[in-house]
Length: 321
Image (tube, rainbow, N blue to C red; front, side, top):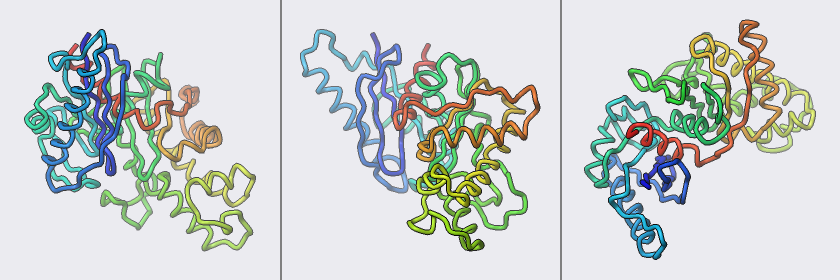
């Protein structure tokens, strides 16, 4: 039996998982993300953490010991565009520029191979392999958090693209008349409306223009309070969530004309809005897509914060088989 590590580098923490060759997650833990201009320090932190954990596994005296020679490699999810050669083209929320992350990780951690992919894309692969997408031939995942991420899995393989941006649904233009710039530098991106921060922005704009009573005027406006108010029957909150769902439905309809997946899965913090989110987005999607493409399965992600590291491990296991 071989083993591998799945690593998901986030802006606050790095999630690390030890997985068996069959994909079973044996153990998971986190370390703080060291923010520096280059990845060397963080990669050294990862090396120390996984070797310490591996040594403790060796010291437990189990019948089936994990030897360092049994480690097949590392899969790594990173927050930025990653090309097939393992080069990360910038990680803004950490402070890195372009870096040959796969080669640097192999050199510093001392385990090879290291396979690197974008975090949203690998979260989609994790859900496809072990979560909401199990049993489907194809799946599109949309991650609704501080930003909007996305990933496409076709026939069990994650779609990366030549430039590493395949699946970046969050930066699909859904409003060509927007004047406010997105963090990416463009304007009118889906992320400006359908991310947690985007939903708050839209809600505050509506509240400033309108005078109706609303539960949203009684507390701080967040994505959670917005969807909670909509669920409670608040008319203005429902109008706002219908509007942001319309943008999501439009983007998904456009995406389906290109990838036409069997399932559409929602993850990230906003997905905790649950069935109400699914109902509103599916309704908007169905109104904007060809009739024969309407019957898609809309699902909530199952793996939570473990999706990225599980997808990273899955990427490694696919590469070495």
